Structure formats: structure tokens, C-alpha cells
Length: 249
Image 1: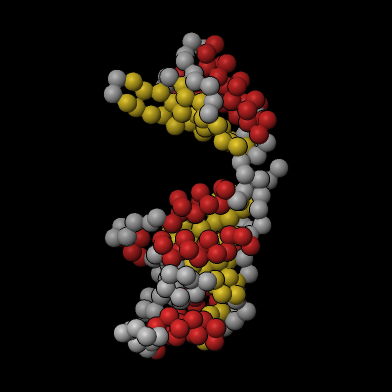
Image 2 (image 1 turned 120 degrees about the horizontal axis):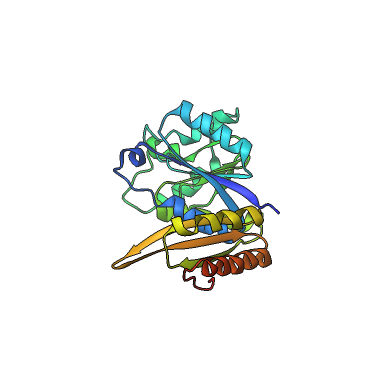
């Protein structure tokens, strides 16, 4: 069993410099998981056309969906739109519908819809618009690439709008077994479970609290019964080795 796959490409020098902290990757991962779409990769790249083109092409070829955030504003360094268009060999044009949305948004405000702001209505030929309920300037979808804003509130509102149109997969079952010992003491058991249950992903995450430590073992898979069985056997083996293990939750 395999789900649809997706990747996110976060575009922006401000993320790489540390000035702005990314809040989109984790949020999108949660949303995709609930749709039964597996996020296979997250990349953070610079505002450089050649770099954007290379990564978009690669991710588009290897995933069912690609989501980008950042670089679709009105300034000189907002080059995501033209880069994505070039990646697919299409031109960028002033989109009438996008321009109308901007005109309506700025109408009656003190903000002038100047030529710089009108740049946000430039959309690759053949792309479909992605609604922006927050600030009107739309994103777009070209092929299997969904281009969205970098501001978290805007990006999230855009994704909420397109989520119903995405193909759904199986929501994975995820169970956690808390072992009251270090992961080095149960590593051989985790390897055994992982080998026996090939369709179950087994992750080991040590934790520390004042005066105690332990290991959270997370088992994930698309077949619920298999995940439950693997978690149950893990508990038994850990206890047989002389360590405490809480039932999976």
C-alpha cells in the first residue's frame, strides 16, 4: 500500500539567513497527513532563479504534488512565479481575473494599485488561480505545483481552499510505545520489529526528564491491524527484556 506523495519547497533568502523562521513546513505536514498524502521531502532554497527551476523540476518529477511558499510578492526578489513558469516552459502574462481581484481589494483604501503591485497579477500561461482570502493576490497551480505565499496566515488560507480538490489517500495509523529505558537497550528489538513488519515505520525518540529518561517508539503504517500488532509485540519484547513499556496509544 502506498499513498500519494508531496514535497514542499520553501523559497526565500530570509529563511536561510535565519531572520525569518519557517512556520509552513510543519503545518503543511500535519494537513497532508490528515488527507492521507505523504510528505516525502521539504527543501528550503534561495531566491535564485536557476536554483528554483532546478528544484521545482526535480520535485515535480518525483512527487504527485509540490507546494511552494514564498516569493510571489511585488518586490524585485519575488521571482518564484517567473521561475516556475520557466521550469515548465511557459510564459508569464498579466492575468485579467487576478488583476480584477487586486483592484477590488484595493478599491476604497488609501493604497494605490501601482505597477509594482500589479506584478502580483502576473501568472504563468495555463495556470489556474489559487484564492487568497487574506490579501487578494492569488497563488496559482501549474501542472502539479501549487505556488502559495510565504506569510503563514496567507499560505494556510490558500491551502484550505485547495485541500478539498486534492486526491485523498489512507490516513496513516500512528501509535506510540513509551519505554522506560534508553534507546540503546531496546535498539535490537526495534530492529527486529522493523525487519518483521516491513510496512510499518519504526521511529525511536529518546526523552529526558529530571531524574528519569526513556524512549518513545513511534510506529506508523497504512494498515491499522498491522501497526497494532507490531506495537503489541514490541511491548512484549521490551518487557521480556526486563524494561517497562506502556501500552501503545
